[in-house]
Image 1: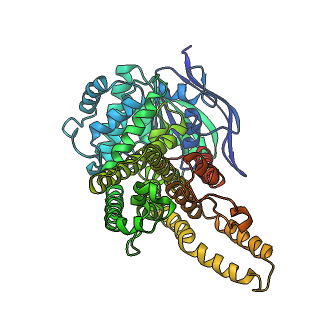
Image 2 (image 1 turned 120 degrees about the horizontal axis):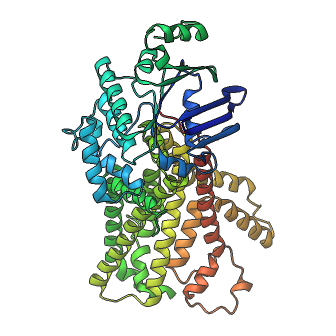
Image 3 (image 1 turned 180 degrees about the vertical axis):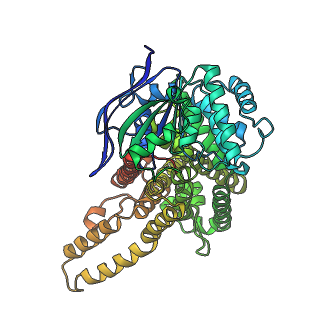
Length: 245
Length: 318
């Protein structure tokens, strides 16, 4: 059995009376692309924040590569790259400068950071925009720069929170191919959160279906390969069918 | 510098360069520099008259550069007390909420740094800019003074000026901390800027007006006993001291005018036998010790508020 890099046990987060994440148990294997699928407000983002140690769980335990996220978030953030939904950059700095800043925050010396940033910008297809201010970047370019920003610290795990929202359909396809490619090339574990059924089906190895803070079911995409409509059926079965797009 | 604190200085460096490139800080620094140069000019053109008055401060001619004025243009010290808070607010009001609105805060927080690094680094960077500006201005005034009046400052005067500049930094940091606090609490930079300016206006204008009204209502009758009058005076002075501007003013007065021996009412009995000579720096510091600790503790208190609210804030993407 494959090694688990993320282990969530009995994870719960309450805001007042509202339960955002309810007693969640989930293990994510090393090297897989795991999809968090669910409608808005299903608790996906909150779960991600707890994995990163940016929010304290009300109850339960998060362990990333054997490190407790709640008590030692800095160690976890060294291993995990996180691309927030609608990522932002310092607009009066160029894409290159933004990447170098992130690299330096991760303790990478400036000279190494320059080389790394250049090669990453080429890999995400921004090779011609290195010296353009990020204020002038389009949404799709920002997301790709975000991916480079996540990768510059050589993470073991990357977490992408709704990374495709706001990009046009062809851009989404490019982005999904890029993630797949990068994951296979570097052996990365990817946690991909989305409410787009088809994107999840295209990209992920396994999918956890979320609804109202609970993990409704786990689906292995490879088992569904010959039945393209299956995931949709499962989704409709659990979530009533009126929430997907 | 060990490995763990290195990212801290990376943030500090970036913040300082941001300040130096931003228009708001540059404009305010130019404004303060110009007004201070203006007040230096009036001080220099009036310094002859100031000496003729024959007070005990005569031996401290150099300090007059910071306090002398002809009434048309306020002195250097008054300008710092008035415009310094604005600089503090300008440097702090958009520190956190702009990062949040631009979506950079959640990206920054997902880097392997401690959360308080962000706030602390921004604070240090702003303080660094403030300190450089104040000391540059202060030394510039001293330099011009040297050229124009030709009398070098004594060691005592130099120390007094340095202490004055350091305390001005504390005073400006107070407003910086307040602005930081507002920038964490309110989502829009405009709201936090206006809240900061509102507090500043309240203390620099309305507080004194309110105190005048209170003072009139409480004033003892003309026939009252002297100790009743003294008690009233002390009470009013203490009420005024709730304003940080008043504390700063008392501190600068004592630091820059060595003849100031007391900040409250003095009776003739207390004055009896006193030689009208200037105080030494240590003694002057003792006179304003309560004001000094008060000012520093308010500054720390505001920073604590900002720190706690930042640490408790849940940061989501914009």
